[in-house]
Amino acid sequence: MEAVTFIQIETAAAVQLFLVGLVGGMVSGFIGSGGAFVLTPAMMTMGVPGIVAVASNICHKFPKALVGTLKRHEYGQVDWKLGMVMSAFAELGMFAGKQVMTGIRRAYGDIGTSLYVSAVFIVVLAIVGGFVLRDAWRMYRAERAGEDVRTHRVTRIARWVQSVQIPGTMMHFRSLGASVSVLFIAPLGFATGMLAATIAVGGFIGVPAMIYLLGAPALMASATELLIAFVMGLGGTVFYALDGAVDIRLAMIILAGSLFGIQIGAIGTTYVKDHAVKLVMGLIMVIVLFSRFFYVPGYLSQMGRIAPLDADLLARLTWLGDGTLVLALAVGGLAILWALVRGMAEHRQQHEELAAVDGVED
Amino acid sequence: MNGLAKAIVYGAASLALYALLFLYAEETVELARRTREGEKIWFLVPIVIAFAFSLVHGAFTGAFWDAIGLRPADKKRRK
Image (cartoon, rainbow over all chains, first blue to last red; front, side):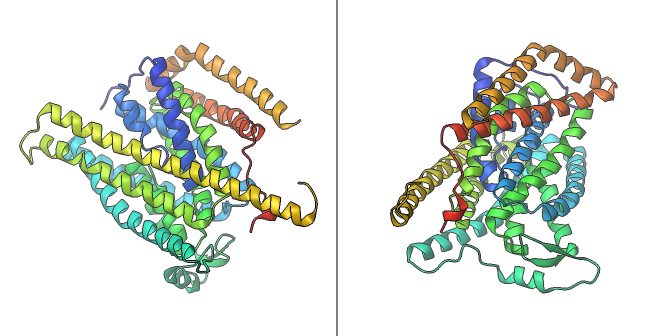
Protein backbone atom coordinates (compact mmCIF):
# COMPACT_ATOMS: atom_id res chain seq x y z
CA MET A 1 0.00 0.00 0.00
CA GLU A 2 1.14 3.51 -0.84
CA ALA A 3 2.57 5.52 2.04
CA VAL A 4 0.35 8.36 3.22
CA THR A 5 2.44 11.48 3.63
CA PHE A 6 1.37 15.13 3.56
CA ILE A 7 3.59 17.58 1.68
CA GLN A 8 4.78 21.06 2.54
CA ILE A 9 2.58 23.49 0.62
CA GLU A 10 4.54 26.19 -1.22
CA THR A 11 2.92 29.51 -2.17
CA ALA A 12 3.23 28.84 -5.92
CA ALA A 13 1.53 25.47 -5.49
CA ALA A 14 -1.26 27.05 -3.43
CA VAL A 15 -1.88 29.71 -6.11
CA GLN A 16 -1.92 27.05 -8.82
CA LEU A 17 -4.45 24.94 -6.91
CA PHE A 18 -6.60 28.00 -6.24
CA LEU A 19 -6.72 28.85 -9.96
CA VAL A 20 -7.41 25.30 -11.11
CA GLY A 21 -10.12 25.19 -8.44
CA LEU A 22 -11.63 28.43 -9.76
CA VAL A 23 -11.92 27.27 -13.37
CA GLY A 24 -12.94 23.77 -12.28
CA GLY A 25 -15.67 25.28 -10.14
CA MET A 26 -17.01 27.23 -13.11
CA VAL A 27 -17.28 24.07 -15.18
CA SER A 28 -18.93 22.12 -12.34
CA GLY A 29 -21.39 24.92 -11.65
CA PHE A 30 -22.39 24.96 -15.30
CA ILE A 31 -22.47 21.31 -16.40
CA GLY A 32 -22.95 19.67 -12.98
CA SER A 33 -19.57 17.97 -12.73
CA GLY A 34 -16.29 17.53 -14.50
CA GLY A 35 -14.35 20.42 -13.01
CA ALA A 36 -12.17 18.35 -10.73
CA PHE A 37 -10.45 15.87 -12.97
CA VAL A 38 -7.29 17.94 -13.45
CA LEU A 39 -6.80 18.39 -9.71
CA THR A 40 -5.64 14.87 -8.96
CA PRO A 41 -2.85 14.94 -11.59
CA ALA A 42 -2.02 18.53 -10.62
CA MET A 43 -1.52 17.54 -6.97
CA MET A 44 0.46 14.45 -7.93
CA THR A 45 2.79 16.62 -10.01
CA MET A 46 3.45 18.59 -6.81
CA GLY A 47 4.54 15.41 -5.09
CA VAL A 48 1.30 14.54 -3.29
CA PRO A 49 0.91 10.73 -3.08
CA GLY A 50 -1.90 9.41 -5.32
CA ILE A 51 -4.24 8.37 -2.50
CA VAL A 52 -3.91 11.72 -0.70
CA ALA A 53 -4.52 13.56 -4.00
CA VAL A 54 -7.68 11.55 -4.66
CA ALA A 55 -8.88 11.92 -1.05
CA SER A 56 -8.25 15.66 -0.86
CA ASN A 57 -9.86 16.20 -4.25
CA ILE A 58 -13.04 14.40 -3.23
CA CYS A 59 -13.08 16.31 0.08
CA HIS A 60 -13.21 19.61 -1.81
CA LYS A 61 -15.85 18.27 -4.19
CA PHE A 62 -18.65 17.61 -1.73
CA PRO A 63 -18.74 21.11 -0.18
CA LYS A 64 -18.43 22.61 -3.66
CA ALA A 65 -21.31 20.48 -4.93
CA LEU A 66 -23.36 21.43 -1.86
CA VAL A 67 -22.90 25.16 -2.52
CA GLY A 68 -23.67 24.61 -6.22
CA THR A 69 -26.81 22.61 -5.43
CA LEU A 70 -28.14 25.32 -3.11
CA LYS A 71 -27.35 28.02 -5.67
CA ARG A 72 -29.10 26.24 -8.49
CA HIS A 73 -31.99 25.36 -6.19
CA GLU A 74 -32.57 29.13 -5.95
CA TYR A 75 -33.08 29.10 -9.73
CA GLY A 76 -35.53 26.21 -9.46
CA GLN A 77 -33.30 23.82 -11.40
CA VAL A 78 -32.73 21.01 -8.88
CA ASP A 79 -34.98 17.94 -8.84
CA TRP A 80 -34.34 16.79 -5.27
CA LYS A 81 -36.35 13.60 -5.54
CA LEU A 82 -34.64 12.40 -8.71
CA GLY A 83 -31.28 13.43 -7.24
CA MET A 84 -31.80 11.45 -4.04
CA VAL A 85 -33.00 8.31 -5.87
CA MET A 86 -30.06 8.49 -8.30
CA SER A 87 -27.68 9.10 -5.37
CA ALA A 88 -28.81 6.01 -3.47
CA PHE A 89 -27.92 3.79 -6.42
CA ALA A 90 -24.81 5.84 -7.18
CA GLU A 91 -23.42 5.00 -3.72
CA LEU A 92 -23.82 1.31 -4.53
CA GLY A 93 -22.16 1.90 -7.89
CA MET A 94 -19.24 3.64 -6.24
CA PHE A 95 -18.73 0.70 -3.94
CA ALA A 96 -18.81 -1.72 -6.87
CA GLY A 97 -16.45 0.50 -8.86
CA LYS A 98 -13.94 0.48 -6.01
CA GLN A 99 -14.15 -3.31 -5.77
CA VAL A 100 -13.42 -3.63 -9.50
CA MET A 101 -10.42 -1.30 -9.19
CA THR A 102 -9.08 -3.23 -6.19
CA GLY A 103 -9.49 -6.50 -8.05
CA ILE A 104 -7.62 -5.19 -11.09
CA ARG A 105 -4.84 -3.79 -8.91
CA ARG A 106 -4.44 -7.16 -7.20
CA ALA A 107 -4.23 -8.97 -10.53
CA TYR A 108 -2.25 -6.52 -12.68
CA GLY A 109 -0.80 -3.89 -10.33
CA ASP A 110 -1.10 -0.10 -10.56
CA ILE A 111 -0.37 -0.07 -14.28
CA GLY A 112 -3.33 -2.39 -14.83
CA THR A 113 -5.68 0.05 -13.10
CA SER A 114 -4.22 2.97 -15.08
CA LEU A 115 -4.88 1.15 -18.33
CA TYR A 116 -8.38 0.18 -17.20
CA VAL A 117 -9.13 3.80 -16.26
CA SER A 118 -7.87 4.98 -19.67
CA ALA A 119 -9.97 2.39 -21.47
CA VAL A 120 -13.09 3.45 -19.56
CA PHE A 121 -12.30 7.10 -20.29
CA ILE A 122 -11.95 6.45 -24.01
CA VAL A 123 -15.01 4.22 -24.44
CA VAL A 124 -17.41 6.28 -22.30
CA LEU A 125 -16.27 9.67 -23.52
CA ALA A 126 -16.22 8.64 -27.19
CA ILE A 127 -19.77 7.29 -27.10
CA VAL A 128 -21.42 9.75 -24.73
CA GLY A 129 -19.31 12.80 -25.64
CA GLY A 130 -19.85 12.26 -29.35
CA PHE A 131 -23.58 11.93 -28.84
CA VAL A 132 -23.86 15.02 -26.61
CA LEU A 133 -21.77 17.10 -29.00
CA ARG A 134 -23.75 15.99 -32.05
CA ASP A 135 -27.01 16.88 -30.34
CA ALA A 136 -25.71 20.31 -29.24
CA TRP A 137 -24.40 21.00 -32.74
CA ARG A 138 -27.73 20.11 -34.35
CA MET A 139 -29.65 22.37 -32.00
CA TYR A 140 -27.18 25.17 -32.57
CA ARG A 141 -27.41 24.85 -36.37
CA ALA A 142 -31.18 24.69 -36.37
CA GLU A 143 -31.28 27.81 -34.25
CA ARG A 144 -28.90 29.65 -36.60
CA ALA A 145 -31.03 28.64 -39.58
CA GLY A 146 -33.91 30.36 -37.84
CA GLU A 147 -35.86 27.19 -37.21
CA ASP A 148 -38.04 27.04 -34.19
CA VAL A 149 -35.95 25.24 -31.59
CA ARG A 150 -37.80 24.36 -28.50
CA THR A 151 -35.47 24.61 -25.57
CA HIS A 152 -36.12 21.03 -24.63
CA ARG A 153 -37.04 18.05 -26.76
CA VAL A 154 -37.65 14.65 -25.17
CA THR A 155 -35.90 11.84 -27.05
CA ARG A 156 -37.82 8.88 -28.42
CA ILE A 157 -36.19 6.50 -25.94
CA ALA A 158 -37.07 8.81 -23.02
CA ARG A 159 -40.67 8.90 -24.20
CA TRP A 160 -40.67 5.10 -24.21
CA VAL A 161 -39.08 4.97 -20.71
CA GLN A 162 -41.77 7.35 -19.46
CA SER A 163 -44.51 5.24 -21.05
CA VAL A 164 -43.55 1.96 -19.35
CA GLN A 165 -45.75 1.31 -16.31
CA ILE A 166 -44.40 -1.17 -13.76
CA PRO A 167 -46.80 -1.29 -10.81
CA GLY A 168 -45.26 -0.62 -7.41
CA THR A 169 -42.09 0.99 -8.82
CA MET A 170 -43.45 4.21 -10.33
CA MET A 171 -42.33 7.60 -9.02
CA HIS A 172 -43.28 11.02 -10.29
CA PHE A 173 -40.45 13.49 -10.98
CA ARG A 174 -40.82 17.22 -11.40
CA SER A 175 -37.96 17.57 -13.86
CA LEU A 176 -39.44 14.96 -16.17
CA GLY A 177 -43.05 16.04 -15.74
CA ALA A 178 -43.83 12.33 -15.75
CA SER A 179 -43.67 9.14 -13.75
CA VAL A 180 -40.79 6.74 -14.33
CA SER A 181 -40.12 3.32 -12.85
CA VAL A 182 -37.31 3.20 -10.30
CA LEU A 183 -36.12 0.09 -12.14
CA PHE A 184 -34.93 2.37 -14.98
CA ILE A 185 -33.26 4.83 -12.64
CA ALA A 186 -31.36 2.18 -10.64
CA PRO A 187 -28.89 1.16 -13.38
CA LEU A 188 -28.32 4.80 -14.39
CA GLY A 189 -27.47 5.81 -10.81
CA PHE A 190 -25.34 2.72 -10.41
CA ALA A 191 -23.37 3.48 -13.60
CA THR A 192 -22.90 7.09 -12.49
CA GLY A 193 -21.39 5.92 -9.19
CA MET A 194 -19.23 3.33 -10.87
CA LEU A 195 -17.85 5.91 -13.28
CA ALA A 196 -17.22 8.31 -10.40
CA ALA A 197 -15.19 5.63 -8.60
CA THR A 198 -13.23 4.92 -11.79
CA ILE A 199 -12.53 8.29 -13.46
CA ALA A 200 -13.74 10.64 -10.67
CA VAL A 201 -16.40 12.26 -12.89
CA GLY A 202 -19.70 10.42 -12.60
CA GLY A 203 -21.56 13.27 -14.27
CA PHE A 204 -20.26 12.22 -17.67
CA ILE A 205 -22.80 9.40 -17.44
CA GLY A 206 -25.30 10.89 -14.99
CA VAL A 207 -26.13 14.09 -16.87
CA PRO A 208 -26.56 12.61 -20.38
CA ALA A 209 -28.52 9.71 -18.88
CA MET A 210 -30.99 12.07 -17.22
CA ILE A 211 -31.33 14.09 -20.44
CA TYR A 212 -31.51 11.41 -23.12
CA LEU A 213 -32.83 8.35 -21.29
CA LEU A 214 -35.16 9.90 -18.72
CA GLY A 215 -36.13 13.09 -20.57
CA ALA A 216 -34.96 15.82 -18.18
CA PRO A 217 -34.06 19.28 -19.55
CA ALA A 218 -30.25 19.73 -19.71
CA LEU A 219 -30.32 22.61 -17.22
CA MET A 220 -32.19 20.53 -14.64
CA ALA A 221 -30.07 17.45 -15.30
CA SER A 222 -26.83 19.34 -14.67
CA ALA A 223 -28.26 20.96 -11.52
CA THR A 224 -29.52 17.61 -10.20
CA GLU A 225 -26.12 16.06 -10.89
CA LEU A 226 -24.63 18.50 -8.37
CA LEU A 227 -26.84 16.97 -5.68
CA ILE A 228 -25.69 13.48 -6.69
CA ALA A 229 -22.08 14.68 -6.65
CA PHE A 230 -22.61 16.01 -3.13
CA VAL A 231 -23.96 12.71 -1.80
CA MET A 232 -21.25 10.66 -3.55
CA GLY A 233 -18.54 13.11 -2.49
CA LEU A 234 -19.62 13.01 1.14
CA GLY A 235 -19.63 9.21 1.11
CA GLY A 236 -16.21 9.11 -0.55
CA THR A 237 -14.77 11.66 1.88
CA VAL A 238 -15.91 9.67 4.92
CA PHE A 239 -14.31 6.58 3.38
CA TYR A 240 -10.94 8.30 2.80
CA ALA A 241 -11.04 10.36 6.01
CA LEU A 242 -11.33 7.12 8.02
CA ASP A 243 -7.99 6.15 6.44
CA GLY A 244 -6.53 9.53 7.46
CA ALA A 245 -5.79 10.25 3.80
CA VAL A 246 -7.57 13.63 3.51
CA ASP A 247 -5.19 16.60 3.56
CA ILE A 248 -7.71 19.23 4.64
CA ARG A 249 -5.22 22.05 3.93
CA LEU A 250 -5.02 21.10 0.26
CA ALA A 251 -8.79 20.55 0.03
CA MET A 252 -9.63 23.96 1.52
CA ILE A 253 -7.16 25.82 -0.74
CA ILE A 254 -8.86 24.30 -3.78
CA LEU A 255 -12.26 25.03 -2.27
CA ALA A 256 -11.31 28.71 -1.83
CA GLY A 257 -11.04 29.03 -5.62
CA SER A 258 -13.76 26.65 -6.65
CA LEU A 259 -16.51 28.35 -4.61
CA PHE A 260 -15.85 31.55 -6.57
CA GLY A 261 -16.05 29.51 -9.77
CA ILE A 262 -19.16 27.51 -8.97
CA GLN A 263 -21.17 30.69 -8.46
CA ILE A 264 -20.11 32.00 -11.89
CA GLY A 265 -21.06 28.67 -13.50
CA ALA A 266 -24.43 28.59 -11.74
CA ILE A 267 -25.24 32.21 -12.64
CA GLY A 268 -24.16 31.42 -16.21
CA THR A 269 -26.88 28.78 -16.54
CA THR A 270 -29.59 31.39 -16.00
CA TYR A 271 -28.50 33.21 -19.18
CA VAL A 272 -28.20 30.32 -21.60
CA LYS A 273 -30.46 27.94 -23.47
CA ASP A 274 -30.37 24.20 -22.93
CA HIS A 275 -28.04 23.48 -25.82
CA ALA A 276 -25.21 25.60 -24.35
CA VAL A 277 -24.89 23.15 -21.45
CA LYS A 278 -24.71 20.26 -23.90
CA LEU A 279 -22.16 22.04 -26.08
CA VAL A 280 -19.78 22.80 -23.20
CA MET A 281 -20.18 19.31 -21.78
CA GLY A 282 -19.57 17.63 -25.15
CA LEU A 283 -16.51 19.78 -25.88
CA ILE A 284 -14.91 18.99 -22.54
CA MET A 285 -15.64 15.27 -22.85
CA VAL A 286 -14.08 15.03 -26.30
CA ILE A 287 -10.93 16.97 -25.34
CA VAL A 288 -10.49 14.87 -22.19
CA LEU A 289 -10.83 11.78 -24.36
CA PHE A 290 -7.84 12.84 -26.46
CA SER A 291 -5.71 13.43 -23.37
CA ARG A 292 -5.75 9.67 -22.65
CA PHE A 293 -3.96 8.80 -25.89
CA PHE A 294 -0.80 10.46 -24.56
CA TYR A 295 -0.71 8.23 -21.47
CA VAL A 296 -1.36 4.85 -23.07
CA PRO A 297 2.11 4.31 -24.69
CA GLY A 298 3.72 4.80 -21.26
CA TYR A 299 1.43 2.25 -19.62
CA LEU A 300 1.99 -0.28 -22.39
CA SER A 301 5.76 0.07 -22.19
CA GLN A 302 5.70 -0.29 -18.39
CA MET A 303 3.69 -3.48 -18.79
CA GLY A 304 6.25 -4.76 -21.28
CA ARG A 305 3.74 -4.92 -24.12
CA ILE A 306 5.83 -2.58 -26.29
CA ALA A 307 9.56 -1.76 -26.29
CA PRO A 308 10.58 0.43 -23.31
CA LEU A 309 10.24 4.12 -24.01
CA ASP A 310 12.95 6.68 -23.48
CA ALA A 311 12.43 8.47 -20.11
CA ASP A 312 12.52 11.86 -21.79
CA LEU A 313 9.84 10.88 -24.29
CA LEU A 314 7.71 9.42 -21.51
CA ALA A 315 7.93 12.64 -19.51
CA ARG A 316 6.95 14.62 -22.59
CA LEU A 317 3.95 12.41 -23.33
CA THR A 318 2.75 12.73 -19.73
CA TRP A 319 3.17 16.48 -19.96
CA LEU A 320 1.10 16.52 -23.17
CA GLY A 321 -1.62 14.43 -21.52
CA ASP A 322 -1.80 16.69 -18.45
CA GLY A 323 -1.68 19.73 -20.73
CA THR A 324 -4.64 18.45 -22.74
CA LEU A 325 -6.65 18.09 -19.52
CA VAL A 326 -5.84 21.69 -18.64
CA LEU A 327 -6.86 22.67 -22.17
CA ALA A 328 -10.24 20.94 -21.72
CA LEU A 329 -10.85 22.91 -18.57
CA ALA A 330 -9.66 26.18 -20.13
CA VAL A 331 -11.91 25.71 -23.18
CA GLY A 332 -14.85 24.95 -20.88
CA GLY A 333 -14.10 27.97 -18.70
CA LEU A 334 -13.82 30.33 -21.66
CA ALA A 335 -17.01 28.98 -23.25
CA ILE A 336 -18.90 29.58 -20.00
CA LEU A 337 -17.53 33.11 -19.62
CA TRP A 338 -18.40 33.86 -23.24
CA ALA A 339 -21.96 32.54 -22.78
CA LEU A 340 -22.30 34.57 -19.59
CA VAL A 341 -21.02 37.83 -21.05
CA ARG A 342 -23.13 37.46 -24.20
CA GLY A 343 -26.19 36.45 -22.21
CA MET A 344 -25.84 39.40 -19.85
CA ALA A 345 -25.46 41.84 -22.75
CA GLU A 346 -28.56 40.46 -24.51
CA HIS A 347 -30.46 40.54 -21.26
CA ARG A 348 -29.54 44.16 -20.62
CA GLN A 349 -30.61 45.10 -24.15
CA GLN A 350 -33.95 43.33 -23.67
CA HIS A 351 -34.44 45.18 -20.40
CA GLU A 352 -33.77 48.51 -22.06
CA GLU A 353 -36.21 47.74 -24.87
CA LEU A 354 -38.86 46.70 -22.37
CA ALA A 355 -38.20 49.79 -20.27
CA ALA A 356 -38.59 51.95 -23.39
CA VAL A 357 -41.91 50.27 -24.19
CA ASP A 358 -43.13 50.52 -20.62
CA GLY A 359 -41.93 54.09 -20.38
CA VAL A 360 -40.29 53.36 -17.08
CA GLU A 361 -36.69 53.22 -16.06
CA ASP A 362 -35.68 49.88 -14.65
CA MET B 1 -28.16 43.73 5.13
CA ASN B 2 -27.28 45.09 1.72
CA GLY B 3 -25.09 43.22 -0.77
CA LEU B 4 -21.84 44.97 -0.06
CA ALA B 5 -22.18 44.71 3.72
CA LYS B 6 -22.98 41.03 3.37
CA ALA B 7 -19.91 40.48 1.20
CA ILE B 8 -17.71 42.25 3.75
CA VAL B 9 -19.08 40.40 6.79
CA TYR B 10 -18.87 36.96 5.18
CA GLY B 11 -15.53 37.88 3.62
CA ALA B 12 -14.12 38.69 7.05
CA ALA B 13 -15.54 35.46 8.49
CA SER B 14 -14.09 33.45 5.63
CA LEU B 15 -10.72 35.12 6.02
CA ALA B 16 -10.79 34.32 9.74
CA LEU B 17 -11.49 30.65 8.99
CA TYR B 18 -8.59 30.49 6.56
CA ALA B 19 -6.31 32.23 9.08
CA LEU B 20 -7.28 29.62 11.69
CA LEU B 21 -6.62 26.80 9.24
CA PHE B 22 -3.21 28.29 8.49
CA LEU B 23 -2.39 28.64 12.20
CA TYR B 24 -3.52 25.12 13.04
CA ALA B 25 -2.26 23.46 9.84
CA GLU B 26 0.20 21.28 11.76
CA GLU B 27 -2.56 20.06 14.06
CA THR B 28 -4.70 18.90 11.11
CA VAL B 29 -1.74 16.91 9.79
CA GLU B 30 -1.24 15.41 13.24
CA LEU B 31 -4.93 14.45 13.57
CA ALA B 32 -4.82 12.72 10.18
CA ARG B 33 -1.79 10.75 11.39
CA ARG B 34 -3.63 9.72 14.57
CA THR B 35 -6.65 8.63 12.48
CA ARG B 36 -4.33 6.38 10.50
CA GLU B 37 -2.99 4.94 13.74
CA GLY B 38 -6.44 3.90 14.88
CA GLU B 39 -8.05 6.90 16.62
CA LYS B 40 -10.85 6.80 14.04
CA ILE B 41 -12.98 9.47 15.69
CA TRP B 42 -10.72 12.20 14.24
CA PHE B 43 -12.04 11.48 10.73
CA LEU B 44 -14.85 13.88 11.64
CA VAL B 45 -12.48 16.85 11.83
CA PRO B 46 -11.86 17.33 8.07
CA ILE B 47 -15.55 16.77 7.37
CA VAL B 48 -16.68 19.38 9.88
CA ILE B 49 -14.05 21.81 8.56
CA ALA B 50 -15.23 21.22 4.97
CA PHE B 51 -18.88 21.89 5.89
CA ALA B 52 -18.04 25.04 7.86
CA PHE B 53 -15.86 26.45 5.07
CA SER B 54 -18.42 25.67 2.39
CA LEU B 55 -21.19 27.51 4.23
CA VAL B 56 -19.19 30.60 5.17
CA HIS B 57 -16.96 30.88 2.11
CA GLY B 58 -19.86 29.90 -0.17
CA ALA B 59 -21.98 32.74 1.27
CA PHE B 60 -19.05 35.09 0.78
CA THR B 61 -18.38 34.18 -2.86
CA GLY B 62 -22.10 34.50 -3.66
CA ALA B 63 -22.30 37.92 -2.01
CA PHE B 64 -19.03 38.93 -3.66
CA TRP B 65 -20.26 38.34 -7.22
CA ASP B 66 -23.58 39.90 -6.35
CA ALA B 67 -21.86 43.02 -5.00
CA ILE B 68 -19.82 43.48 -8.16
CA GLY B 69 -22.89 43.09 -10.34
CA LEU B 70 -22.76 39.49 -11.51
CA ARG B 71 -26.36 38.43 -10.97
CA PRO B 72 -28.61 35.73 -12.42
CA ALA B 73 -31.01 36.57 -15.23
CA ASP B 74 -34.27 37.98 -14.02
CA LYS B 75 -36.68 35.14 -14.80
CA LYS B 76 -39.81 37.24 -15.27
CA ARG B 77 -38.37 39.03 -18.24
CA ARG B 78 -36.64 36.10 -19.91
CA LYS B 79 -37.96 35.29 -23.33
